[in-house]
Picture (cartoon, rainbow over the protein chains, first blue to last red):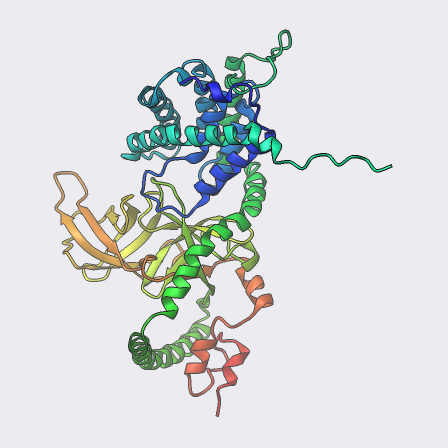
Length: 178
Length: 318
């Protein structure tokens, strides 16, 4: 689905930052440790790297990865690594993904999320000797499915923000009194 | 570029994506090495954690509110039962506390007579479990005590049932506890019934740990009690650790597989006690000296002059 409706609607930096902050808050919620809860930050980073690859690059992904490492209390840098791989993959796929229907997008993104999460597990295995568990396969599936919904929602918000009707609701400029 | 308003730069393209990826990966690996081998990355972690602290606390608020409301809504009869149970427990404990106090002063006197190094009774501090870390491979929880309260890395953590785990990382306001079921935590233990020593290692499963390196000839049975041996000088000896649940006899040339269930569960009680090994002494002294008050107040007469109890010990005298 090439989003014709959102072509040329440049989202403000504030909006991009707001989506990332919301994703971060989602990740900070006290989830049960054993559930394959999707990593919302990864989803949002993939979205912006697909739709705005020239503005959002690897730097925010890397820095937000460090924040996630601190929050999870794990070795610093492993999420930075994972998100960098994720963003690179998203930038590589950014011309293909929007042309696919939902299931096509899921099929493209599942391996991407899988590789990214596998890099985290590889680091854990090399450094701490801990083997992967079932979330290695379940979590990317949840992320790829959720990505479809999240990307639709962000696009809808963008369309709403840039609808001409919203422009008319603004107060007309009052004539200058002389 | 579906969303960008302006066309991308024609000449100034910047670094290619592949080079950027290479830089990002190298930087990530470098940070990992710094974090693992040196203390350089520690201030970064501390700083970010302090910034994140209010956010995570705010996100825990709805849950805490629900807990609080649940506690308020408990029926009166339940609370009465709880009070009865605690009273019974207190009476039971008062007897043994009395005995412990006497033994402690006796022990101190005898040790003085024999010129032995005196046993120290470490300071401790009560805290509460705030959250469990979302990390599928490690069993860790966060408590509301940190460096400001004198907690340091390696401090043992117990609750009323026994050993909970060990402090693995300290932040200014919080600390991370590695639970007994974490694969990276090892505690030297002793099985009183068979007199065997060993070491525990978490199995990575919730509420389960293995007893490793036990004597090959030892006959270990299901239901055997596991207590700390105190050989590491870290955990006080004799603390309950758990109970053996499964024993798989040893094959030729191998250790038997012994699986045990921890005595203490943070899922049941949120309150934990951190035993402050070092640095805690001054911090606790400056903050308050209340740690040993329950012991002192339970004794009808003040402890012997040489007993290491605090000056408050004299207050309950009639």
